[in-house]
Amino acid sequence: MSQLSPRRRVPTSSSGGGGSVLNASAPAAASRSSNNVDLNKYKLVFLGDQSVGKSSIITRFLYDTFDTTYAATIGIDFLSKTLFLDSGAAIRLQLWDTAGQERFRSLIPSYIRDSSLAVVVYDVTCRASFEHVPRWLDDVHNERGDKVIVLLVGNKIDLGDARVVSTDEADQLARQRGVHFIETSAKSGLNVQALFKRAATSVVKNDPRLSPRGAGGIEQRTGVDIESPRTSLANVSPRALKTTTTTCFAC
Image 1: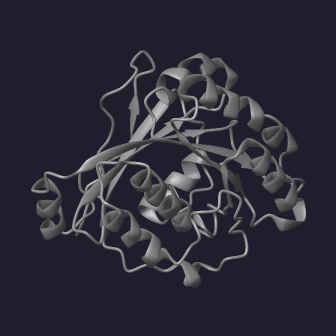
Image 2 (image 1 turned 120 degrees about the vertical axis):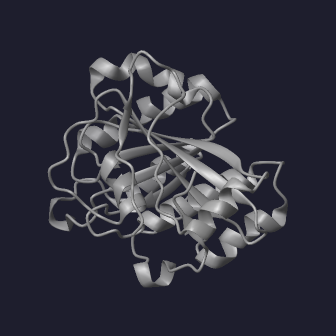
């Protein structure tokens, strides 16, 4: 049986390095990853207010589970996952889960600084978390300018009766700020895989080290329009997003 190593918290005094490594691949896939000299790493940093579901989204992606008893992230958590492209190349997504509390705000810029993609998450049932999105986007812009891809994510769309931020309103903000936009439910899993497939394809497309074929492999297999930064996938069913892309958790 495949085993996952536990999530490990990165010390708040550190600005990089360490973290837990998830090993959930078959031996052949692990060997393939270790022998692949073309493995490129991409840092994805997750930003947003406390309790918007950043950790839940990551956990749903990695473990396909949802826990109703999450404790607030303290400092920074780090996990990673390796994806294989059509071309045979592997890429490693390094997922940096940041704390949303104000007292950790001063730590965040150092983690944004060398990121390939920033995921800014808000809670569709909490207007304050949405109203704070421009500040998070400003933090990204101040540290990385236009050198980083940004995904705006509205989470908890399973709580339809409690929604206070409409898809159109968030889409309008995404248009104004020129960022990608998607809505998800970490609880049901809706669009979580689509979010990460969009992220993976975007960073590959933005990386001159990889050929267009490598990028096109993921894009073709997801069947999701990742070119438009304003496409909301709130109504796309998980079945429509099923992919045959080989994935593993080996690092």
